[in-house]
Amino acid sequence: MERKCLECGQAFNGRSDKKFCCDLCRNAYHNRIYRQQKSLISQVNSRLAANRKILENLYTAGVRKVPKNRLEEEKFDFGHYTSRSRNKLGKVTYRCYEYTYYSDLHRNVTIVKD
Image (cartoon, rainbow, N blue to C red; front, side):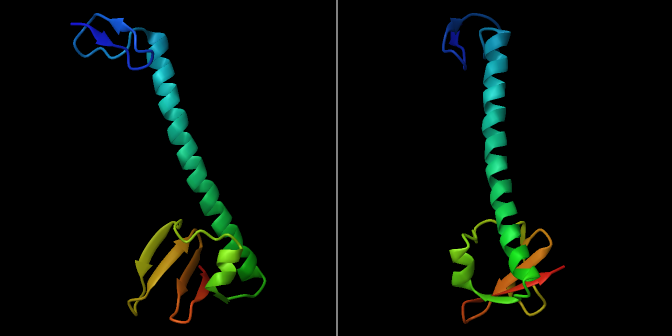
């Protein structure tokens, strides 16, 4: 049965479970997949680090409660956090490494360092 290489598209013959025409294509394919995954992980880690830095700067400046739009102005990405949970009162809290933050009804965000 003739199949096509997943990397270069060249037709080849061989075992029924063979996916690549040669070791060079197999390595190139897996290296490309690894680079793509590493890039995605790197982008998420960069966004988390930026969020953490924003929280750290506000916290060390003595700010414990900040309007949500100030975080937005600082380019805080509310879609990236390290975990989410509910506190004892049922309020949803978010963590970005050692910082916990949550919103109130007045669009203020409270920052707590653990």
